[in-house]
Length: 491
Image 1 (cartoon, one colour):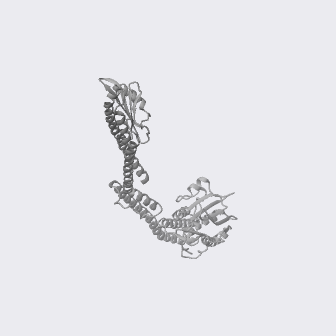
Image 2 (image 1 turned 60 degrees about the horizontal axis):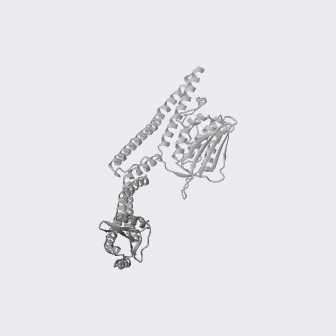
Image 3 (image 1 turned 135 degrees about the vertical axis):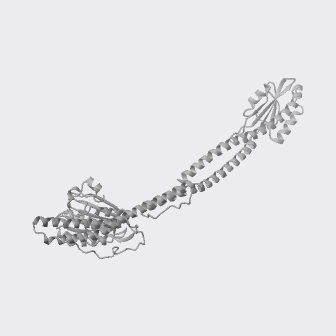
């Protein structure tokens, strides 16, 4: 933007200089030419006064010596012609050239002639002056001089070069001033753009300095800072409310489950026991929802601190942790592509929680005899982790909605879960500057791919960002997931 603003200033300055200097340059050329023409007219008029007696007497008289001395002294050729156009007297340097014929015709008609009007730097013709020789109102002949225009051209060119130099200095001064002015005007806009990108990347504490630039932009910067403060405060309040509500509801929910559980022995009929079992399942489901909301609130509150981890080692750890649940459900769970470390830069626990959610979904929906494959590979200058299953998969429209909060596929409404697993995965991946892509598998199933950027050179690898071991294997009879896992229910 600064360059475009400077170019607009420069264009305006050039137009002003052209409007001022072009007429001035033409005036200087015309003035210098008029000065030379006036001098030559005076000289030609003097020669005409001397030539009258010579033409009447039929001889050149002293005129020949005058023209020779004039030519020798000034280098200007001159000639005297009679009324028939025949040369009577001519200096040694006289040469009939461009414009002399028309000049003599005008002078023999009784009028003075001088031309051209202006000598331009690119012109090469002489300055021609012709004066009639009169005697009692009768034209006896004419005096004509041809002045080389080299000196006039050099003078005009010098004036024009001076004007061009002054214009160039003015342009340079304009450019220097324009850069300073544009920088002062646009500095708040530039900083506003940078701060906007910082906030978009997760630094919600970034603000614009309000004392930069003109008053209008200072007010804009102050308004932007106020808006950012309000938005940040609203987001903090919203996340704090979700976290606090999820945490505070766990205690009464635990107490409610214990009371419902204690009612079991007092129920004698089969219908009552069935309703009792359903009530316990609903309390477990509500507990899962609260845990998922708490995890989501914590993930969104991350300040985007980045660490470097070995994605291959983490994938091996999570596959090992989920093997008991996979065996219990008769699902084959395997890991591919961990022959060498695969380093990635993420927010803490992003890969752990994302793989927990994706593997949980894959094992849950693959069914008995299904296969779940976790693949680790290098891709696009980073590290990709794929989770493939052989379950029913999702349609294209369902894939578009899979990461929405609390969304669940219509055919899995009765399956345990809160509908927040993929939302949490998307939040963690986005905070890591990564990508989450999902597509239909071939010939069936679902392929969920995580991509994380490669670390910078010299980054230290964090071996265990979660601070634990490989996790605790799931107890399929108890229906709980490994340590730190989030149950997902997208489809």
